[in-house]
Length: 106
Image 1 (cartoon, rainbow, N blue to C red):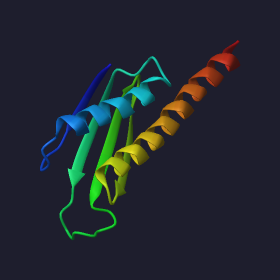
Image 2: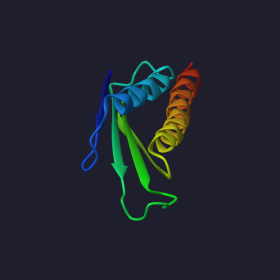
Image 3: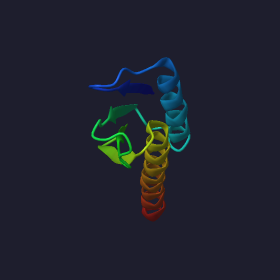
Image 4: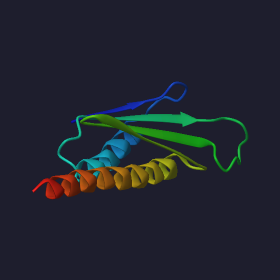
């Protein structure tokens, strides 16, 4: 499984990269069929106290589709955690659909 952390305007620090990879590791526990995880981080510089200044987008490649979650928050790390929770839910639901489909075939 490949994990890539990217940003257009923000320089990705080593601490942020390690945090994102650690969060992506949580997602990988739900399914063995994940081929890659792309995390796009963006810090929107509108106002200093903007409640949604940080934006994170997860793109998880599973066989047959790409699951995408976008989250915004005041803090970049908080946005990463929120997006991780959202994508974990989607991956879990997708895995349960595959399991239920296999059980229905029997």
